[in-house]
Image (tube, rainbow, N blue to C red; front, side, top):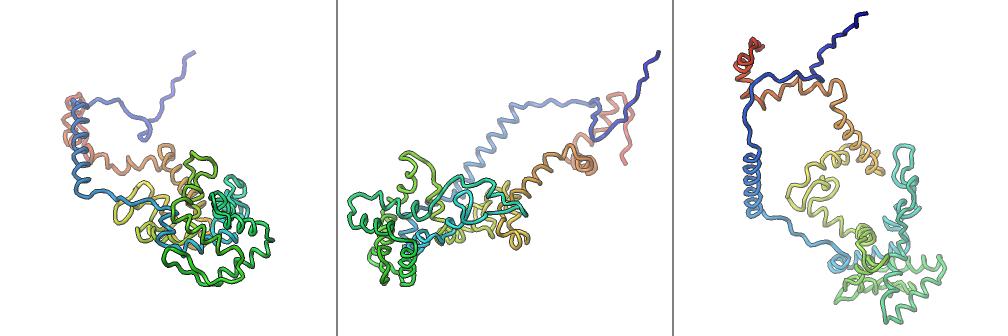
Length: 333
């Protein structure tokens, strides 16, 4: 019984014929050395000519030094639980459902993984760690033992009074505010000394690199956003891919930052823009990875012969190469 042999059709987008053309010697060591030397010289020359942005890191100390009133107002919001981080939701608390993907509350699915209590972690806890402050200790005890209604009355009275800063002292005209003026003034002095930065970082241990609390505290005020806007790093300035000032940033981040600039993210998606941006970037990334397997997309390089521009020296000699291989030169159409 004869075995039936079926011929397979040649698929130009998958199958590759055996190479029968000519060969050119290539010294990869020499080419690599030349490339390294050129890149090294360009790097040194551009570094000398343009330098690099050398910005000091933002800290609680710099914030309270340059904008002590903004710091004090933010501290009051942390105490009464009305700051952005206090109302954020997961993974810090349960104050809000968090960002959603359509009807799906993804933040609640994740849950509270990094519990943050704004009043305790940003204000009361760091102040309680200060040694040798009997008056402050008494005020903290009075505040913690007061009822929630009494605390809110004190905070409203303090917020209603104007706050100013002069001669290194935070001044307010609040009356009937209980221990709140002492607490806010002490926290401001602690922040200006730099002790609050360390106190926020070391709450979970002395040796730690967890900057969650300082970053959340900074983000709750207006200092961080004002610096970001000045340095062209705000969200509506494509800040995710910018360096400070006019320096170009990371171009590979443009796809992620793109979704924050188009109307869906700036209108209907604004409350959950991060989730939508992650999903859209993920879908585009998967499409890019699957290009070799998607019919039509994988044919684009063959249909649009850009490769002929890259290898134009060889294609100019293609008839000669084919003739030397014993084949009839193909006509160019």
